[in-house]
Image 1 (tube, one colour):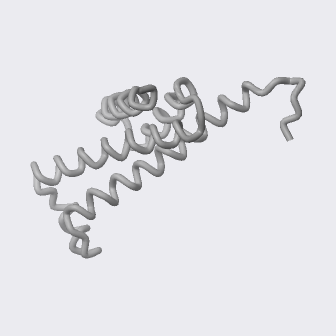
Image 2 (cartoon, rainbow, N blue to C red):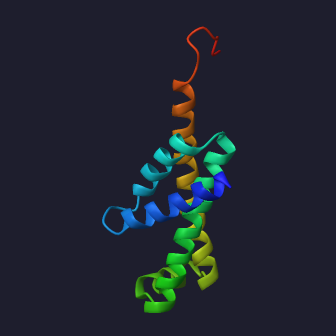
Length: 121
């Protein structure tokens, strides 16, 4: 349930901020959301990955179906990609970038929580 909440927050905030800011704002969103909400590294990576992969996959599919984007069509022709493969690749690229950012956010939070008496190494 907590991971579902993390996925929803990341997708909604990421969508809202991408309307006005560059694409890489997803990294900032995932970093902060994972630092605040994630309880372990698996949750941080998976929640960030799924949230942005779903967001970008859905947006790519809707944009391509609604507008028959000329640029996306030309890129698909150059690389011999089908519509479905274009959507999957876009979702994977966004998901991997988001997962790495979410993992980094979790590790920064985790490193700040280390006891001063414990031996970290």
